[in-house]
Image (cartoon, rainbow over all chains, first blue to last red; front, top):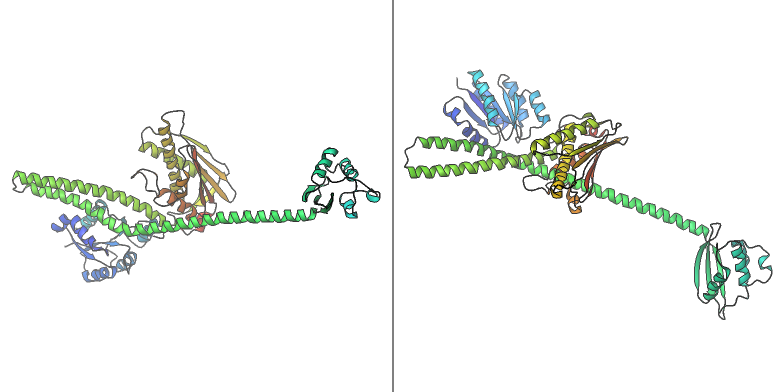
Length: 129
Length: 395
């Protein structure tokens, strides 16, 4: 099964960064990554995927229009089985509390510690394998 | 010279000076008049002849004298010379007028004091507002810088890995030795540069994180906290932090805790941050003075005190360090103002402390200092301060 990770961030450079950071995994087809630059685009993509290959959603919080926290609630309603990890530049206690309350698996702060993110991803990949 | 031969009077003078009605019933000389007054203590302990001489000598000059009588009443005496010698003296009892003037003066002084206090309060308010808007500006800038800076940090970190991979790839490639050496040298330089980008990026990130603290409403939960315990904990934290950072660091720590200091509703993390900041600054100033004293008798000391003020509590942190020059004192709470060498301080510590005390807790923070002697920060926290502020985050 092709495992898919959906990354949601309004900054296009996030895709470049993630593709470089996870280049070996992507090259070896350990999993694939898709990128959405807004919450509505992400919701559309979740609908389109419609199968069980989606193993993880990583989402920014501060995005123009629909925020990451709104996306979290909607995505959880659509796919309660898919873990969602929030990524934010401002990891304050209140945002963290809200994100975890609304069903996020974890909240990571930017600049992203890719060591932590990698272990989060590895855990989901192994679980799904 | 004026004659002393005649002295006439109208009735009022007798009343004003408590002269018996009979006094002017018979002809009186000026000497009789002065003798009577001096004998009755009108001028205190004076010599009759001297007084008379003084009056006679100045009899040809117009003048006005105010004097207080033994019974406390105030007299105005207008002396007018008359052609051909002699003078006319007009007496008025101005006691009531003087009292009225005194009342007006007291009222004016009170008004002036009130105005001065109002101006001082206004200055403080303007300063607080200025600092608040600077704080907002600082946080605003930090918000804008944070995202691009994150990319700088993440891309430089991944680039370091990519250079490693490049080296691995080159290891298997067929290259002549000169070209290989050249490529290897370039890779080394790129690696070195990226290490610098990573290092300074992390430094910038730490500054931006501090700048963002300006926009916070107070992190964590506010709750009633024992002030003495909080100050004691901050002293210990700061001391052990300084020891860990700098080997051989030592300072005398004095505590003067008011047992009645009690509890204050506050954000403990935030107030601890302020106290750590003030104590560390005190350590820095005392250590600096010790270095300048070059041994000597100087003993670096920091003194922490608390005081129950009823509806509020005062915390003071005093060091016997280098003190603060007045031009520095004015800018002390401005964001990014620092006297420390580059890389040692961001200049945000006191501006954030000001925000935390004034904006988050509705308190006040003031500094008293003398160059080369001491610096003392005094914080006053209202007991219910933090409970008035909404908990949470505005970022």
